[in-house]
Image (cartoon, rainbow, N blue to C red; front, side, top):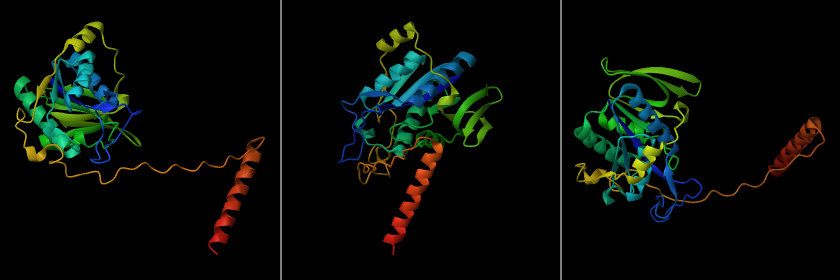
Length: 274
């Protein structure tokens, strides 16, 4: 079974900077990590390989430094890693990103066989849109199961997958035909510690790099040119004023003080409004 996992290198959330002119994230010189949700997706891909056999291909789109995130996938147990990297991909929104990744997946399938399962993290922590995974599925014309928290069964002969997805009010069990794309939540697994052999392999691994021409990608659908959305303005939200602390010796006294403060505030608003 061929399993593909799509991952992204994201800025460390403690050091996020935005270019005020382009409205895009500044990645050069910023510490970056493998998107945490994608780490869970990669771990699940490796577990499926161990359970059913096959190979795992990790794919990412980004600048050359994104190869570090792909090496993390190799350390987790992926068999190969592909980086879609080209200046034509720069500044892509979720629409253009899903296009580039879908083209990379199609190229990977021509190289190593059709993928039965495609995994993504539920969202990237730098954008939080949760749109790329579903966008890939739509472009490939395959079903999708979002917010997957458990994969129960993958039956290649019957051509079906059964999984559980986490909803606000419970867990839903879904069956879908193969091939299928799934987006994974953090509850699906706990990523393993990389073994020493895999760590050594990851350090030495040279990612396969494909540009826009290698993917036969339409330049009008890539990068900023292919992105229908744009950042109109970037600004820091105003700081919130500190709230009032209600003092008291016990809960009853604090509640009484809170009620008095609320009533005083109501009287102030009523007086101001006339």
